[in-house]
Structure formats: C-alpha cells, structure tokens
Image (cartoon, rainbow, N blue to C red; front, side, top):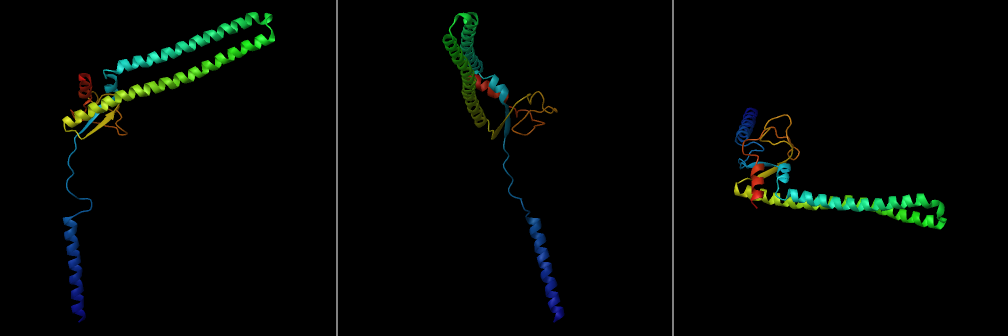
Length: 200
C-alpha cells in the first residue's frame, strides 16, 4: 500500500514538473506579439527657427520695440539731468520751497525712469514670447504635415550641432533629454522642414 502511494506521489510530481517545463518553454513573461516598427525622425529646432521666412521680420519687430523704449527712457534721463543742472546752478537764488518743488519733480521723473525700465523688460519679454510662439506654431504644422506625408510616426527636436555634420562625435546634440550618438541617413529632416516652410 505504501509503495502504491509512493508511486502515485512520484508520478504526480513528475507530471507537475513536466507541465511546468512545457509552459515555461511555450510562454515567457513579457513575451507577446512583435510590436510594429515606428519610423522616427529628428529636427534641429534652432536651425529651422533661424531659417523661418518670418524670423528676420520678428527680430526687427522686437528690436524696434526695444529701441522705442530706450528712446523714451533716454528722454526722461535728459530731462532729469537738465533739472539737476538747473538746481545746482540756481540753488543759491531759489527759495527753499522752490528747491523742494524742483526736487519733487526730479523724484517723479526718476520714478518714471525706473518704471519704464521695468515695463521695457516685461514688454520685450512678452513681445518675444508672442512672436516666437507664432513661429513655433508654423514649425509644428510643417513638421506634422511632412511626417504625415512621409509615414513618420514620431519626430524629436534637438539643438546644437547638426546630426548630419556630426553623426557620431563626443559633442552630441541634445534631443529631449537623451544624447544621440548616431543617426542613420535620412533621420534628420531639418532641411526638408526648412524647405517646406519657405514654400508657404
């Protein structure tokens, strides 16, 4: 009886081991149908931006805004300096009340100069952001259209040296947090995007 029970136990263990080996060979964790291959491309955003047909006009617009603010501040500074010179020359001939009034005017001008500096920096920053956003929107549309037309599934942006000129150097450009050490011919579509933008 004991021998029969022992034989059954050994047989059951053998079946379990055999079935385990079979399933281990037939399926492994993480295995599944092969993922479809995705076509990936990269674009040098700096180069595309600087070659955008509207880039020069945007730069001129920003510089014009800066120049206008600078001229306004310069006129205030000249007014302040003129009043300071008058005060220095006529201090002995003016009444204390007149001197105090003149100094209040100078203080107001100085306050306006400081506020103009602050507004100038803020205004230039907002203008630059708004104008640059328009260019980026154009670039995004051009990239999306090109990718759709050429069966590209994913496009990364990078900056710095061109991948075409330095495909595998130690000074690799930055691509969204990763450092590409090599790019196959045709992966970098920067020139194509620049050409597409210039056609519009």
